Image 1 (spheres, rainbow, N blue to C red):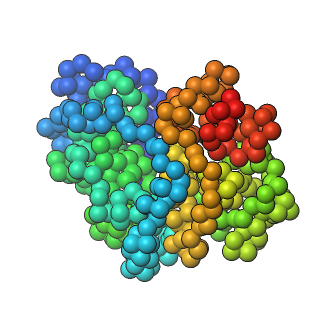
Image 2: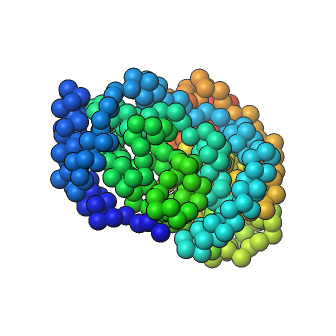
Image 3: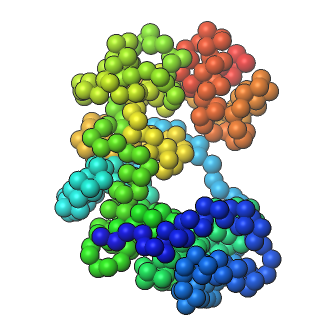
Length: 394
């Protein structure tokens, strides 16, 4: 098993205080910038040879900058996105992978407490089990984003950790490819997390999350454990909700337990109420007439992995399906809002003093909270779902 070396620990300590320095060292001549990166890496314990090998031939990738400037927004509904991502084909492949790597998944759960379905769902969602990992040169992507003065404090540490990976012999900077923002491998992790949580699952002395499925599975497990996954506890469970539920209590941030919800008439579809003592929230991705779920503390790791509510709910649901759960009940959600209507609703809510974030047409957490408060004020079921009726009422 390979863990972070003294080099990685020293580098992490340095990175904790390097955000301001990163902001001060972006832009300008690329050669001068790379010399500064090398000096910082060597000061943290990297060899000059490793830094030279990692940075030799580095170039600014204009396609990376274009992607960074024009990131798409997430506007699909839960039913649309989950239908596409949690397909029968993916479920079949996922179960095959869980069987093929049963020993590795067993080790992941034994050592890190993370069930196979949780890891396999991320594996599917991120790269279709390693089939689509990205074709951007990782070194150039990170050099580009660290050199750019938009978010250097995020990407300079990743570039420094890439040098660590090169020194370990875990990455060839000239040929390694991945996502445009520097994520690498079958579960798409950034260099800093690979260095900190990388596990040599196949015993070859290296952590190669791009080509080695055992390495990717165990590294993901250790990272998920780090995010706060609680051994032996559920993460999400489909429920049936009564028509008279106090809808204003639904959504994230609930102070109720699962037992409290069960007492109000919420019923798990699988009949399992064994987790009644756990803190729990009711999430309604498309309102009270659509699919309904109860979430537990382990759901927080999904929000740490990806802040998109639709992605996280879909990934968590995917994991339960891989572990044997039935398909959700679609229900009959009320029609939602189109892009321009959603922006109009956000604009109205913002004018009323609510913090909805960017006016982007996305039904994010801030917008959902504001909607619930206005629904309650107007005497409407406060389920957080944006409808034409609400827009008209405002």
